[in-house]
Structure formats: structure tokens, C-alpha cells
Length: 254
Image (cartoon, rainbow, N blue to C red; front, side, top):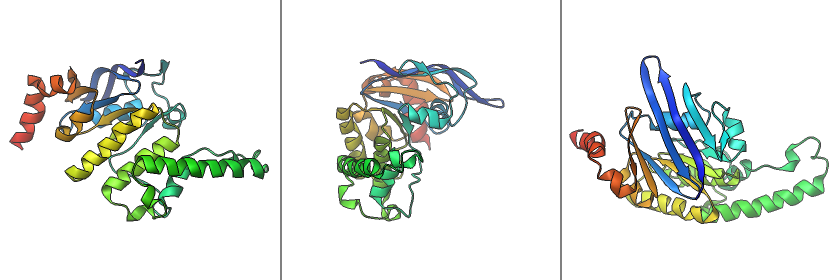
């Protein structure tokens, strides 16, 4: 498997706080890579630097061999690197299907092509078929006509994934995909996500609930206070004394 996402000594500071401290990691194509760490370890800041929400202060971000360091989010989205957020933000007044369709590109949106109605109507029909197929793959096919505001937490998380698929993502960074979801639904979400690798998709999953997420990961990185402290298979990382000390041990102390 080739390297799809690579960070080289990525660094981000806020005043005197080093939130991401020279972090180097690699996400292999068609894998599920897990990024773990206690609260405040820099996981979300790292994702924000990779996806253009924040501009890194040092280091590089490479996507499929191309340096995307400091690119704005829309350019990173256009090359196929999509991210979700801890709190899903769908268009609440639209149906589940319309939310997915809204993430797709359509020739009818161009003023020059809009007049060729036959072409974009045909594309819209294909988009609907594609959107319904995507909804089936993430377990939302029975909810296609419901307003998104009626969905529960687990279904909202999967709607975010569906929108990423509709946008033509090659790599999706999922920020806390099972946050606020009960354990049974959490397993369901990660099972759907893992199954999407069959489509050639790659996932970078930022998650706090490693007891549930680790079994779905191909590779794991662990952060603490912005610094990479462990990497390897799920078993290797979860049994690393440094991870037990700063992550599991800290959880038990809370």
C-alpha cells in the first residue's frame, strides 16, 4: 500500500503553547489509521492543520505525494481529502438524501452549462442513484426522506461520512466519530466505516474511546501534549507503557 497522507515534523503553536510538536506520521492508502490521546493531546489540532482549518507553523503535509501545507480547506477538499467534525453540521431543513446530493458536483451549477438542461438533468438522475447507494452503504437508506434534524447522534455521524463519500473523498478524517454515541451504536458506526475500505477509501480516525475503536484500526499513533509517543499495531500501542501511563492511567485517575 502506498502512502496517501504524510506529515513531516508538523508543528503548531498558540503563543507559548506547542499544541502539535514536530509530529510525523503516515496514513497508508486503503487503511484505517487511528490517532489517539487524552483530552488536550493535540489530536484535533493536528487534523485541523492537515485539512487547512489551521495553518501549521512548521513542517509539511503531503497528500498523495503533493505538498498541501497551508492550502485553504476548499482546495484540500477538491483533491479528495475530506474531514468531519465532532459535532455534525448538516443542513437541518433538508432531507437526508438532499444533504448527500448537496455534497456532489453537478454541471447544472455552472452558468455556462446550466442552459444544457438535458445534460445536467441526466447527471442529477445519476447523482440520486449514487446518493441512494451511498446511504445504503452507511445504513441510512431507510431514512432517506427524513429531515436531518430528526436523526439521532449515530445517524448524524454516518450522514457526515455519506457526505464525504458523495464529495468524492479518497481520504476521510473522522474527528470523534463515536463521541456521544452508546457502545452498541459505536460499534455499528465503526463497522460501517471499516467496510467502506472495500471501495478504496482511506480513513484517519481521531478518537478518545480507544476501547471500542482499536479493534477496527490497521495502525495506531498516540499523542500526548502535542508529541508523538507511540506508533504501531493496536496491540503494540495499547500495551506501550507510555500510553498506559498518559492515557489509560490518566483516565482511571479521573
